[in-house]
Image 1 (spheres, chains in turn cyan, orange):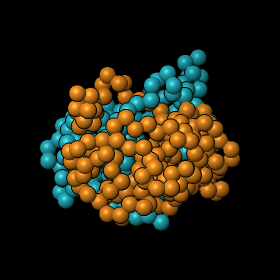
Image 2: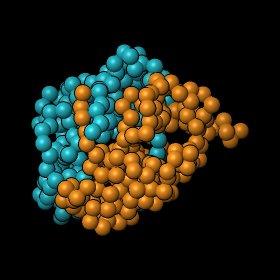
Image 3: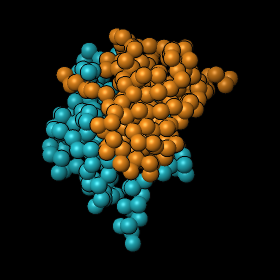
Length: 149
Length: 149
């Protein structure tokens, strides 16, 4: 067992999960803040140079998990590790956000899909992308194709 | 505080951190396996459809953290949240791997940068990329530019 303590918290306009865009074509354009605890401020040095960040966080209002579940983007069930469901064996979330600016321990970001108050475990620079032409998106691409028919 | 239990373990040829390619131009082409525990097998349903996966794991052989550190790719110090240093407040690792195939609870992957035996916390599908032209890579791009001079 491994124990983690938040390094900060998300400040967003989302108070309930119903408010967060989901499903096919959902866009995450919401702006908000990542408020890092004062004792970790030095750890943010030079982060302004990066346009995008990985944020690793906790689905702290999710309880239990389902190994199979039907995501909002499909009408068929898929394995939890092939989805971004909050009901995971370890309820860890991962988001890519655009860094708009930093003031001290506060990061202003765009692209939030987390509830207000969500605990943050880690932040890492987003360094490289898989070229679109070599990316396969499994059941999600199939669900999109079915929708377009 | 949040407590997590591994869903599986990495099998790689890396027995020590010295063996893992690091620094500017380091390429992660190593093949290996993600061995998921039998009780989570159903959670892997349909994962074969994805070409790339996010793997969230634990730097289980790292102790303590440094808010500022000099990464192998530079000769200047940067904040821990602007680097991929293993010495983080929460020692969580994030890797993108290419999924080569699945046999039951074993995922064959390429692009490992973890030590053999590394505990895995979560796996998620890699769904989208930031277009290269909108990606800024901060101190890393500067370190690369200095090296080329």
